[in-house]
Length: 153
Image (cartoon, rainbow, N blue to C red; front, side):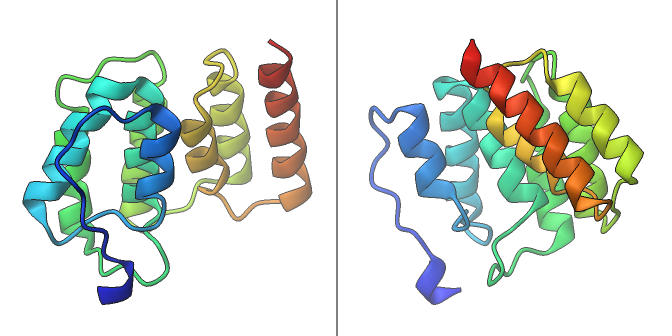
């Protein structure tokens, strides 16, 4: 955990891309105060920032010491008061991932299709994409189709 721990400066203005890059594979699991502060900050930045935190909860970095009960509590905290049309799908998927479940290929494809109308919610899409060990070619094709549509708008 030591090499992957990030010391966060006092929070000031941080844009969405900066925030998402900073938490990628180094969410402060075992520091409850910092974890809660990042959850609150994500809500002030954007829905995509919230979904980036969700992605970290669902898929902790390889070397993260992130117990499922801690991740589950943080997921509940993340969802409290957060409203977005993609919330129900993505939070349900993340909860299943935290519980050690994988979606069937069809469930993942259906969830990806449902997210398609929420352009720019990359972390939500990535979470669902990684929720299944189904046919990689089919999942990749759907991901690329949605990505192309989002980038064209």
